[in-house]
Amino acid sequence: MSEKVRTYAFAGVLCLICSILLTVAASGLKERQNKNIAIDRQKNILKSVGLIEEDQKYSAETIEKLYFQNIRNIRTDTEGKILKADEHAPKELPLYLYVKGDDVQSYIIPIETQGLWGTIYGYLSLKNDGATIAGFTVYQHSETPGLGGEIEKRWFQKNFEGKKITDQGGDLVSVAVAKGAVKDIAQEKQTHYVDGIGGATLTGKFLTSGLKTILQEYEPVAVQFRKSRSLKFER
Image (cartoon, rainbow, N blue to C red; front, side, top):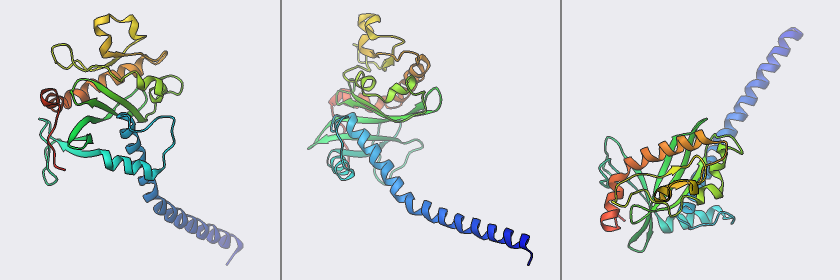
């Protein structure tokens, strides 16, 4: 066998071994990666209803414990009907409930909407009056750091707390990101707006549109809460 052939053979075997090692490593880490993703989402759901603090560190075990003690995961159809475990609908909407004893304190809607550079993922929680925002979080986005990327910062997310998604007549109007400061908007509309981000008008515009579309989808659920401040579900 010539030196050239031996070189190619050695390179081929080396590449094969490296490929096998990388595949094994990726497979071995997959479960851990999936668990970390699940923990991060649970953390953001808990944060949206005020069960954990932004500036505190929590172990994965603590996050899981708090989540399973307080949060219930259900599905509804587009009419707001809760689906049983063995039921399915043409379109299913995931919903999370923050429960204390037998009472639903808040319900949490997953946010998945287009941003300026990619998809924005997060959670929007509403109190059991079906009208008042309890919290908002973002756990993944592709917006520009220092500009649209501010949507992940606490100052921006905290602005959503206490805002209303309905008008005085109880009809859905959603919540919007202002082009500037809320104080510059007509006073009667301020309860439906949060402060905008300087230099990130388009991010605010995309988020405003996406939130309205999602809230419209979940409006049948919100109506049930507005009527009775409750939602019956299987425990």
